[in-house]
Length: 433
Image (cartoon, rainbow, N blue to C red; front, side, top):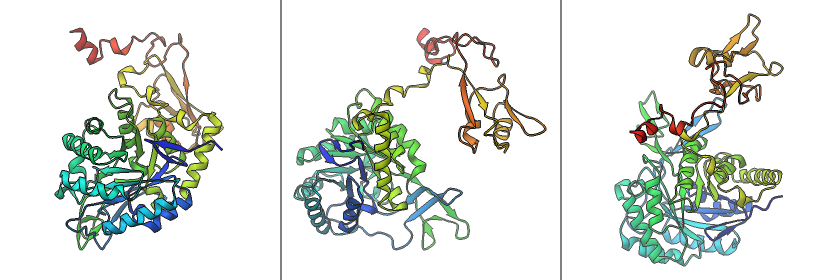
């Protein structure tokens, strides 16, 4: 099997799969079970400084979005940081780290945005022999009124300031966890970089309401007839997370900043996609909460097999797809494809026809005996038919060769002008003016 051993900002672990800071990493019992199941590292659930007590609700803490088969697509939580005493957490962390020296153990922190708080807690953290700290600047619920969580992560100046404090008062590697509840992920990432962060992790959860109880007329999860927004995670947030990771990985000022990818990692393939777009490792929460800690074993075997088949080292995977993530105007408009239907695989369900006829380009014909064919003169290769087809590889795209004529436009394939200089491109028009 391929070697999955990982070194992320100097922190070594037997594989790149870490558990994210969340309920699965709240105590020694959980973390020991996680390590024994095969996880390469954990980020201990967020600790706070001494001060006003953390009191969690004694009722439903999670809302969920299910697929048609009851599969968990998204999970919303209203749980706060750990409500266990700081000294208990620190004692357990120290013991676990001594017993699992080959595993990564990073401590998530969230304290008020004042220098003295950070200085004090970092002294205590140092004594645990943990491998690093992760600054929780992303939690979107429950702590904003104390000037913590996403209230910090949404202000780049605060991110830079606190990161500098942490680097000043601690020898440990520092990961800054970023919130997706911003219009652009780049200003927070740039601020973390300026502050001296060793890495960033993203995404934290998305502010959300998953559903409404239509009898009690309250958002869910519901506590005594009332509900609140929570943090959304799970497979549904993966596309958002991938985009934000890639934006950081390709930006000139942050492309060398290590990234720990978070957001909907459920399978080895999800992890590989994050790593291809620039993540040095991945963190997982919802998959473990849904399927248990042993889900990591499939991730390990799957990623190992994939790397073996590609004859690729783990380090070669990281960032492999970043050069191919470009702005729209840099896409090749001389590349022309058309859908084609494999009649041997087609089950005549008609989903492609209904979707294209009603909502797209009327490019699929249906014969009286329900044989479906593509009308090349109408097809724009939008891919919708493939997306709705229930049979894998029944519908595919074929590339038209250069020099042939596109039946839809009458244009010779390969003769389209460079879009970056095309007069219909607004940027090109502005440059010309």
